[in-house]
Amino acid sequence: MTKYVLSVNVGRAHANAWKGNEATGIDKQPVDGPVAVTVPGPKGSGEVGLAGDRVYDVDHHGGPDQAVYAYAREDLDRWEPELERTLPGGVFGENLTTVGVDVNGALIGERWRIGRELVLEVSAPRVPCATFQGWLQRAGWVKRFTEAAMPGAYLRVVTPGEVRAGDPITVEHRPDHDVTVAVAFRAVTLEPELLPRLLAADALPTKTRAKIRARLGIEE
Image (cartoon, rainbow, N blue to C red; front, side, top):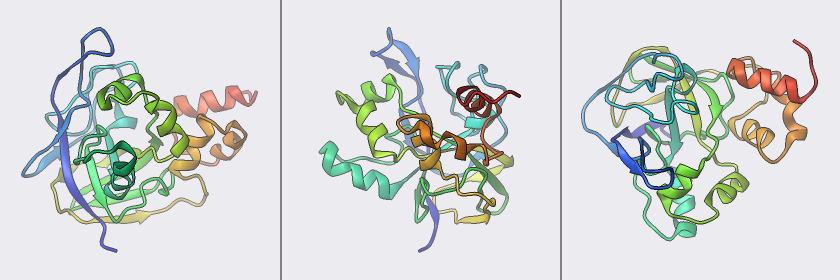
C-alpha cells in the first residue's frame, strides 16, 4: 500500500475549559500548501516542529522529542463507530494524518523520509491527558484510549524540510530491536512487565529511559 501524508494539521489557540480556561493547541486544522518543519527549541519553550504550531502545556508537550505527532487515518476510522462521530484529520491533535503507515507498529528509532528532504525519527508514543478527554467531550476517554493501545507516535526532526498533503512516506531505517510504539505505550501504562524490553530502544527520549531504569531499579 502506498504510504503518504493525507493532511498536515496545525494548531490554533483554543480555550481549555477542562483546565481553568488555559490555552491549548490541541485544535489542529488541515492546512494547504507546504509547511516548514525544523528542530524546535527545548521542552518548556512551547515550540514544536511545524511552522505556525505550538503547545501551551509546556511541561508535558513540545521540544525536540515531541516535534511532530502522527496518527493513522486507518486508526481514526477504527474509532469512528465507537465515538459515533466523524473524525477529521487533526482531531486527535496530530500534525500528520497518514495513510498506509502502521504508526503504532513503527519501531522506536525508525526513520521516515517524507517528500524530498524531510526526515523524521519515531521517538515515543503519545500518552493521553485530561485535555484530550475534554476536547473530545468523552467521559472515560483516557482509560479507553489507553486500553486500545493505538496511541500514535511522536517524532523528532532529523533533517528539516517541508511537508504537504500528498507527500510520500518512505521508511528509510528500522532499528534492530522489536520495541514498537504500541509496545512502548503498553509498557509505560498498563503492562509494566514489558519495561525491560524498552531498554533495547536507544532512541527513546533520555528522560524516558532514565525513568524506566529507575522503575526497574537499575543504577546509571
